[in-house]
Length: 590
Image (cartoon, rainbow, N blue to C red; front, side, top):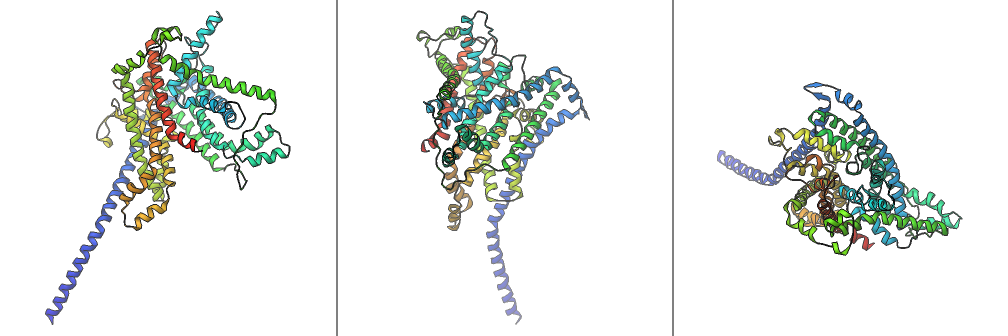
C-alpha cells in the first residue's frame, strides 16, 4: 500500500515538475517583455530628466545661486543696464507689431491667391512661397544684399539721388520689414488650408440676400479663418520675441533684441547670469503665450453648418478701381518676394568684381563660385558638417519619437500622458534658453552621461538639434500613427504574429511616407539653423548657419558674398525638393 502511495506521489510530482517547466517556458517571453519595457521606461525617464529638465534647472540655478548662496543680483544688474533694458524693450515692441504686420500681409496673400480672382494667381503664389525655400540667416542676407548700405537697390538710388542716405536700411524698420516678409510662409500653408473649409453655399446664400462682398468676407470667411489666424499670430509673436538673425544683420547698434544680447552676455563669464536671466524671461513669455494658444484651441472652432459642403469659388472684385489696385498690390508684393531670390541666383553665377560693383552682365558670368565651393575644403566643410549634424539629429528624433508615439497610441494611461507632455517641453522654450541650459549643465563632467563634459564637443550640437526637433516630430508622428487602420494590426495578432514582426511588417511601412517627410523637413530646417548653433558650435566644426553669418558681416569681401549666394542657391534647391516631397504630390492630387 505504501509503495502504491509513493508511486502515485512520484507521478504527481513528475506531472507537477512538467507543468512548472511549461509555465516557466510560457513565462519566459513575458519576463523578457517585462524587462524590455522596464529598460525602455528607464531610458525614456533618463532622457526626460537629465536632458530636458535638468539643463533648464541649471539655467535657473545660474541666476539665483552664485558662489554657493541665493542671490537676486542678476535682476539688479539687468534692470540697471541700459543696453539690457533696451533689448528687452525692443523685443516686446517688435513682437506685437510684427504680429499685426505679418497677420495683415499673410491673410492678404491668401486672399489674393485663393479667394479673389486675380490674374496670374498661381504665379503669384509661387512668388509668395519663396520664403519657404530659404529662411533665417540666408533670407536676411538676401534682403541685406538688395537693400543694405552697399546693396544693389541702395546703390541705384544713391546714383539717382546724390543725397540719398545709404544707411537707410537699418534699425527697427529694417528688422520689421525683413521679418514681416519672412514670416508669411506659415500663413500661406495653414490659413490657405483653413480657407478650403469655407462653404461656398453659405457665401451664395448671403449674396442672394443682398450682402456685399466686404460683408461676406468680414462675417463669413474671416470667422472660419480665425482659429488658424490666432494660432499663427501667436507663433509670429514668439518669433518676434526670440528674433536673432535680423537684429544681428540689419538691426545695427540702435536696435538690438533679447537674443543678440544673450549671445553677447553669454560670451563673457562675468555676465552669463544676465544671459541666463534674459533667457528665463524669454522662456516665461513663451510659456504664457503657449498657454494662451492652448486655451484658445479649447474654446472651439467656427465650422460650416452645411450638410453638403461646396468647394469655394474665387470671388471677382466688382469695383474696377478696387480691382485695379488689388492687382497692383499683388504684383508689387510679388516683386518684393521674388527680387532677392532672383538676384541671389544670378549673382551666384557672377564673378567677385561684378558683385563688388553690383553689376549684372553676361561678360561676368562664371561657374568659378561653384567650383570654388566644391574644391575648397574650407568652403564645403560647413555644408558637410551641417549635413552630418542634421542627419544625426533628424534620424535620432525620428527613432525616439516612433518609440514614444507607439507607447502613446497603444498604451493609454498616466505614463503615456506624462510622456507626451514631457517631450513637448522644448516646444514652450526658446532655442536660446535650451542652448544656455545645455552649456550650463554640460560644461563640466556629469555622472549621468558617463562622466563626460559635452561643451566643446560636436555631441552637444547633435543633442541641441535633437531636442529642438522633438516637438514637431512628436506631433506629426503621432498623427501618422492615428491614421493607421487598427484592424490590420488586430488581424496580424489573430494570425499569431508577434508584436515586433507586426510593427516592422505592417505598422512601419504604413507610416514610412510620413516618417520620410518628417525627416526631410527636420533635416532641411536644421541645415541652416542659426539661433542654437551660434551658442553651441565647435570652432573647428563650424555649421553652415554660423558660416553664412560670418560671411555676411560688415566689411566682408566680394568673394565671401559670392560664396554666400552659392550656399543660398544650394539650400533653395534642397528646400524645393523637400517641399515637393512633403506637400507637392499631395497638392497635385488635390
